[in-house]
Image (cartoon, rainbow, N blue to C red):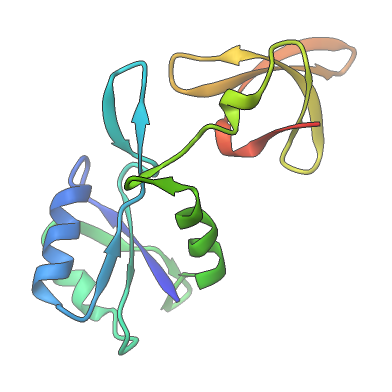
Length: 153
């Protein structure tokens, strides 16, 4: 099981370094992607870091440099199942999460957003998000949607 730690702003790499240095049994995962618009590598989830420890102890995260807090569910840290993490890691190539599902989309074609909305893919926005034309309340609305949530129909 993985925990989700919120990092200090733009300190994901520093937090990853300190998690792994201060607790050699812990594993920190910072999924990143290539942003072709900015021509830089960015964290897929800014200000967040996935962490797991084989002993199941997470208290060390509270005093780790670069970590702001642990995402909690009540009095326990919220967990990300290993299955979900494997799905995310399967999308990696050469250490970067591939967001190419959005690249397979063809402007003008129908897409599905999540499991409840359908729309027409119109292109990519400058923030590496998909622009989708939706019909809502009798009119056309353009929405910017995360690439991972859009699938061709």
